[in-house]
Length: 438
Image (cartoon, rainbow, N blue to C red; front, top):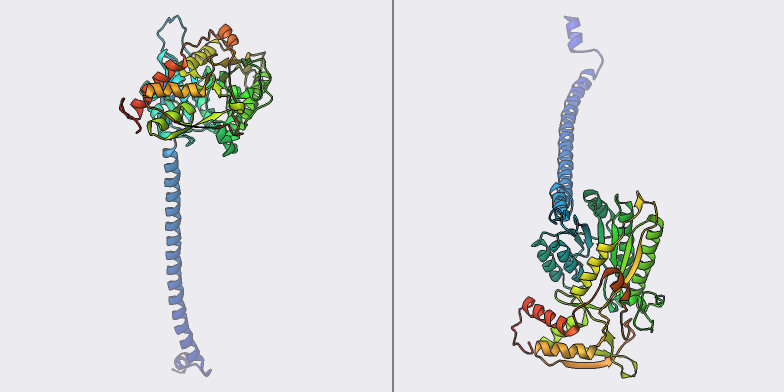
């Protein structure tokens, strides 16, 4: 009994109280730890849920970007291959047909050349970044026109080396017609970086893709009559000096000629440069004088007509778009093969430069008079001295070399060409034929 009592009531004073208190404390601690563990588990659960949500959002964002991208995927590759496939009939006298990558395909010259290539049975794939230098809706309309004839245009930038590499991986292009560029002489004073980005960096990126391609394509690209700069010998010949550019635009085009020459020399790329002289016609560029004159004349707004020193009228060798297209296609048809493989030159390759003009310079006041005749509206002219913005007083092309080697022969004079342009303009912008001062 005593032992039992000793067990129940120990002789040490306060021991029972301490043990009883300790038991209560243990129970509190147990509850506390149980509660803490539960909270910890809930916290882990919330963290896991948050991580899962963020991971899912990241996946959705990445997927959205992927699916929103303008290129990539099996369907995209099938579209590229279908557009690039030549469609000339078997045994055609013109041969099996080319597969041409056209840069700037939704631009003025690019759209016309792409359409002409497709109509004669060549394979064509376009690329264009649809920038906002002028109204992108006009470029989108050209893209829709090309799509209706089976030409696929990739929305992308020529500075995107991954995109270019992918295009050459999907299709072994035989030729590249490089027409993408930042155009305009005066805009270079507002945004000079865009000219370096497109006309220099973009050109190098494209040439890198071409020299790494297997097989290497022949390259035909758009230089400019602007490279003649301050040259005062007329008519302008390919043998004349071009080391005095009058604008940044001209300087970037001259740089392009030097850059393409180096790729020809080092890597064996076949290169043909084309110096365009003031191209005009339907689907043209809104920043060009004939286009803006037409718009302002129809809207009853004054037009600014520049005049050179000593009150000399400015003159341009206006060249109709159809004639330019013939020169571009003739250059593609006569371009020799590139000789490089895997970026290494195996032998000399052709390097050519041609003027593509009309050989008949016309003064700007005469241009305005022709527009007035076809629009049936009198222009409100504001004649001012030409500012120092990079423009030159005249251009005049010597096309004897292009005539000899390309069979180039322009056939459309300015009156006939502007008549076609005005007809297109009135139709495209919805003017009635007899409208005046709208």
